[in-house]
Image: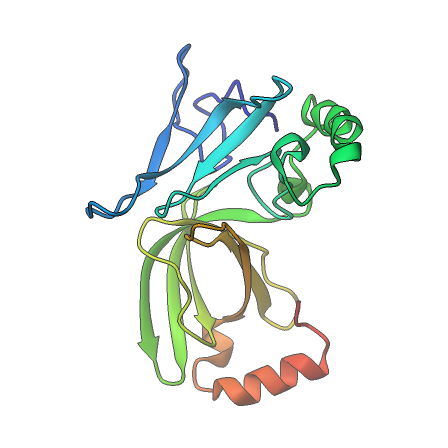
Length: 210
């Protein structure tokens, strides 16, 4: 999905749910401190190098990234990705732009679902993440092995459950250097009374860790 023409029925989880002719930004989470920045996403951004439609993300600490898609595998726009070989940026950018125009985002075709964090708390050996799946507003409750860097209102992506009650949560870390964080998640009803060390050992045996 390109970073433009987001309408009321758009379920990307990042843009405003209204049509507008003007540039749109959406505040996601704001920390009221003088030494931090407003964290936001602009789904209607334009690459300053090639003019292609892109997604712009800024973290609380001033980190800035241009993405071709907002979601796993979080492809950075080649023109502004300094980790991309400079000699190949132009050709790769043409491919990325062509891919944007007329195809669903990779995260959608891979069945990832955007979620909004509602609450995070500790229960027994686990950290419990309560969230809403934005498409359909379905409530989910997940178990995590350790406390993640997630807060109320943040947007993440949920991989969906497999046959063993395993899933993955993917999101952008809030730092000066923006990293993609992927953490294992477990189905609440199946594992809440199981020590997470035991659950982790079983998951490793099945080869279900990313």
